[in-house]
Length: 77
Image 1 (cartoon, one colour):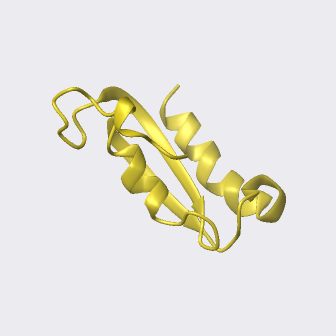
Image 2 (cartoon, helix red, strand yellow):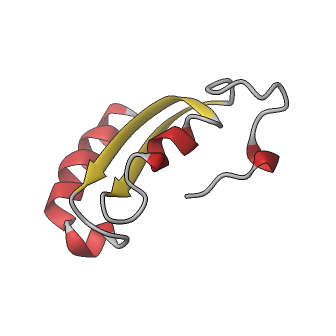
């Protein structure tokens, strides 16, 4: 995920965006922790997780991804 300045809230304050839970996932060989920081530009309720993987998380680390995604979804029903 890449966020441009056009998507940042007009006040420009990090974390002042959407009031929704966001799960920001990244692969260490692709975007890594930058995914979390990018998501925080438009949302304040962000949980980030970096996997030891590249770009295609669902294909490269499906079990590890499920261990992160399923609890997140269950908590935000």
